[in-house]
Image 1 (cartoon, rainbow, N blue to C red):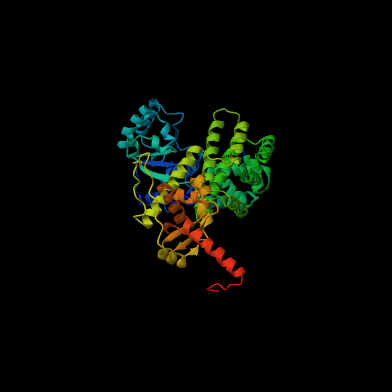
Image 2: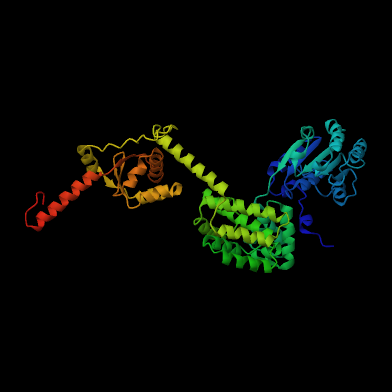
Length: 525
């Protein structure tokens, strides 16, 4: 009878266990030195080697000819444990044997000395499924076990175990296996089975399995049934995944705000029997990849994808704001949750994509982002100039009170400022930054220019509305914050020229033009 790959290639010694050196090295040393605990607790996600290490440990402590802490695999004890003829090693599924009576029976058996082996080993899988009564029945035995008994408890949900149980065990945490390690193991298995696999396909399997070697081998088993040469496309068809180009195409529609094109793509995937919940999950992963690209210097250390896919994803990420990417992930995850609760999955998927194509963000998330940006701006100004941020009084002037007018600088002061002033090239960027928080204020400054002179930014405009806006403390602080965000420097605000000066300048210019037209020389030419 054909043996599935995850059983056929299950490790038989600690050295063959992939990606868990923090566990295997310690267990091998304990067996070699004879310093064995009476109870072990193996925790970690599915398919990471808990049951495998339990079986290796049960053979290693009973092996007649151990090799450097590993079982020899050849003696009658090792062979008997493998074929199930040695009754001193017992595997118990706590999911179906979780009552008090089951544990009481175990306690009674534990009192008997081993029939063939040195130790009676009890492997209790998914131990978190035991009832409270069963845990209480097991507790006394764990606390004072017979010298010939070893307990190995395995669980994927360690938080459900009582603290009294965990405190009596030697705990080992199994990590998710790195994608590269899984891919290398899959390549080795394929070589042994007489088939070939592309590296991208092996990495894709590792990504789908989420760090579980057993799941990876199961998916490889299915893919080998399709083809002797396993490509990325073979894996996608086997796992029921959308083609990567489809995910990128849907995201392109979101970038282009093209809901019709996105709906056509969803319809095509639906007609090809693509599950909409799975598609939503894959889109979440795609946006997560863009989020990591925007926030990490080397995202390829975390992302599992080909170089070509990474390049395309980088291009898309560069065109989207991080706040929109985060909002899209939030929206897609909410949509996925609703799909699992019985709503029409296709309609839900279409609604979500249309919403994303509109470019709108969740209102709550948008407000939160706006508040964070304001706090960051205030903190930056405070660090640059502690006196720049002053508390604003909440008192309002009386209804007949007038706001203080800004006193024009003297002519000598204005002349000195103008002599040192240079045009501020970033002024349009400052106005764009202001528009993010107040479109009205930004509109009021349309057509204006600005100059930098020392620690001053001098604003120049023919429109009085500009300076009416700057009379308000809130608008002045908003302007200073925008200037700081664009330039990285703190400036005081001033006016480049005043109406009377402009009139005088205009009159002098007009007189000079008339004299020049009449042929009368003008001083300074």
